[in-house]
Image (cartoon, rainbow, N blue to C red; front, side, top):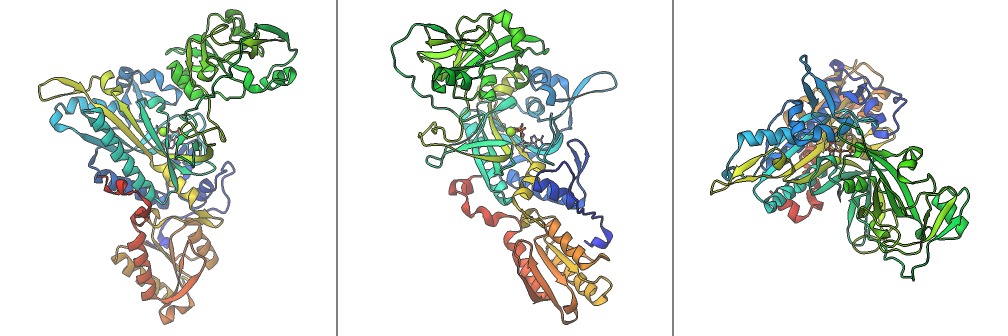
Length: 592
Ligand code: ATP
Ligand code: MG
C-alpha cells in the first residue's frame, strides 16, 4: 500500500473534548472520526485495526465451535415485549418506527433474536450443545457518549449465545467462552483482569467481566491480593460487621439543631458514625413510568449505598428509581428531610441493610425537624420490608472472603460473560425434546466483546507521547517503509522492492512515498504506530536502510535483505499474538 495514493490526514491538534490519550491519538492518527455524538466513522487505517481484532475474535470463537451467523441490526418490538425488556431496558433502547407506525428497535444486544431463531430452528436434544455468535453493530442511546470509542451509541460487538440441556453443560459452555476470552484479550496485548460482575439488565445468575486496566476505565474493580477475590464494585459482596452487644436502652429524642448530615449529627452528639443510621429516600416507577412506591433505605452511617444492589433487591430496572423529593414524600410517609429515621414510617417500602439487623442503641433521625433518636434498636423499634446487603465495598474494607483489606483499580470493560440460565428460554418458550419426547427449556449463556472499545483500550495501554504503539497482532500494517526523499528514484525503487518482497512473504507493508518532508513522515509513522519502520534514505545506493521498532528507541543500519528478514521474523513470532499465551494457565490452553 502506498501512501502517495492513500488518504491519511493526521492532525497536530486533538479534539477539544478529548481527555483520554487513546482518544486523542486515534483521532490525530486519522483512525476514527466522530460524525455525531457517540457515532464514529473509521478511515482506512482505523478500520484495518477493527478488522484485525475481529479476526482474532473469530479465530477463537471458531476454535471452540461457536458458529458465526448474522442477524439484522433492526428487530421488531414484539420479541422484546415478549420478554418484557421493551419496558425494562430503559432509555438506552433505541426505538424506531416503520412507515406504518410499527415499533422496532436497533439491537443493543440480541438475546431475544437468537432465542427466537433457536426455538424455530432447533428442537432435539441430539442437536445439543451448540453455540452461535455474530459480529455486528449494536446501538445504545447512551446518556453520555464519551471517551472516544469507549462509550459510543453505535459500536461493534461480538455477541455469542450458548444453548445446553443442563446447568452443568451451561457451566462447560460458559468456561469455554471464558477461556476463549482469555486468549482473545491476551492476543490483543491487553493487560486485563477477570472480575465477578453484576448481571445488570441482561439478567441471569452469574457473570464475569474482562477489564483492561486503566485509570480512565469506568469499571471499578475491587480485588484482594491475599486470596485473589476480584469483583466489580456493583457486585462485590460485603462481610457485615457483627452488631455491638449491649443492653437495649430506652428510645430517647434529642434536640440536634441544623444537623442534617451524618457527620454533623455525630459530631454534635459525639458519636462514632458507625453507631448512626443513614437514610436515603427514593421513588420508584412502573413499566409506564408512572410513580409506584416511595422507598426508604437505611444503612450504617459510615457505609455507602450500592445502587446496583438496591435495584436488585427491589427487583426493578435501574431507570425505574430516582431520589425522591423529600418535601413531597414527607406528608405521605412521615419522613422529614435531613432528620429521617426508620422508626414510625408509613406508606413506603423500607429497605434495611443487613448490617443493621440486630443492632442496638443506634442514633437515627426522629422524623421531626431538628431532632434525632438515641437508643434505636432493630426488631424492637423498626424492621425492614427488605433486609439485605445494599452497601458498597470500598478500598481498605475487609475482603469478604479472607478479611484482608481490599485494593481498588479502574478498568475498561472490554467483555462480559453471563450465565443466563432459563430466563429467556422460559419467557420465550424455547424448548428441546429429550429422548422420551418431553420438552425442556434450554440452559442459556451469553457472551459479549466490545470490539471497537477493545481497539481503544489497546491504544490506551500502548502509546507514548509520540503516538500509538500497536501490538503486531492488531497493527493496521506490520511495516512502514519510509522514503526519506520521494523525488530520489534510487530510494523509491529500493522502497518498492522491499514492499514487494515483504508482501510476498505475507508481511503487510505500507510505503510512505508521499512528497513530504522527512520529519512529517517520521512523525506520522510514530503517530499511527506501525510496529516496524524501515527507512530508505541516503544509503539506498548501497542497498542499506535503517531498521527501527516503534516500541524501541534504537535504530540499526542493515542491508535491505537483513531488514526484510528481521521484519519477517518479527511478524512470524508476534503476528497473531499467540506468543503471549505463555502466561495463560494450562486449563485455559487445553480448553477447546
Ligand atoms: P457498560 O457497563 O460499560 O455500559 P455493559 O455492561 O452495559 O457496558 P454489555 O451489555 O456487557 O455492556 O455489552 C458487551 C460489551 O459491549 C461490553 O463489555 C463492552 O465492551 C461493549 N459495550 C457496551 N456498551 C458500549 C458502548 N456504549 N460503547 C462501546 N462499547 C460498548
Ligand atoms: Mg457488561
